[in-house]
Amino acid sequence: MKIDIYDFDKTIVPFDSGSLFCGYCALHYPYIALLFPVQLIGIILSVLHIITFTQYKKFCFCFVPFIPLDRAVRGFWDRHEKDVHKWFYDRENYTVVISASPDFLLEDIAKRLRVDRLICSRHNRKTGAIIGENCRGEEKVRRLYEVFDKNELEVESVYSDSLRHDRPIFSLGKNCINIVNGEKKPFDYGEVYTNVQT
Image (cartoon, rainbow, N blue to C red; front, side, top):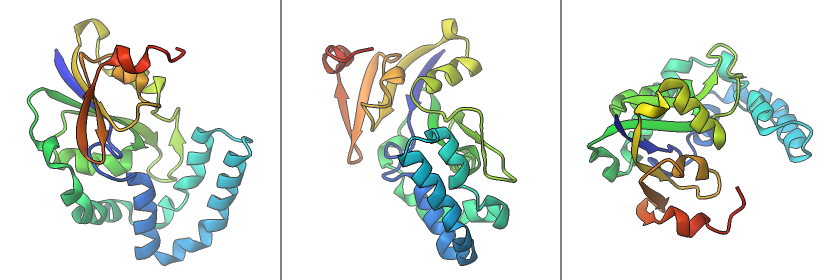
């Protein structure tokens, strides 16, 4: 099975969708400002390395129980669907999007863009809390093979803005494309990662 793998944030769209969604919700549901101290505590604990980034994400979306989630997500993508990079619409292979962003946030846009398979961080839709591991780094590869048989996959191209975090998925592709300011920049995996410790 021939597939192309795409990161989402700053790859398919030019922003971090989770952060922008938080801002969108603060603007449209200003009463959630009462929860800012809780989020601030999460930031402090994360910066001090008292909690992991995955644990921090439990604080990020603590406002979810207090908003009409489906309506908020729909309104968010009604506003930002136009920001999807035009080149993403020109696809030939089976499309797999793998992202650290929440499933509740990306499911709507994935349907609009006719993504074949979406793999992202799982969240409790009632509480906003992350379930399991943040879908980042090596976890992206683990989650990919949780869905697909490794021996039946042929990864044609991998697209991501992050050379630092997405080395694991870049290692799977015949073609590696770094997204820089919305532009596709192909690169040779061996040349870029030769002197990087595994």
